[in-house]
Length: 89
Image (cartoon, rainbow, N blue to C red):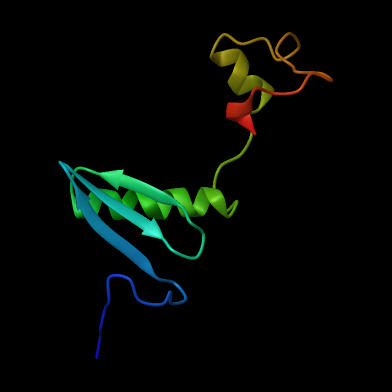
């Protein structure tokens, strides 16, 4: 039997889903990761991907060859000892 309360205690693996204006918002309570989508399904798919990224289960750094294919010279594009921008932290 399933039950739900809007402001009840958190449960392991809990996902909260609600509508704001024209968007559906999905939040993984355990990680705090939150996404949105135009439909409930889109919001949940986006949440699955975002949680996997958060946990390091997907994603990787591009190879030098992949960077070159995009027109980026990996030798000239390094932060060195410089602090990366806040957006990358």
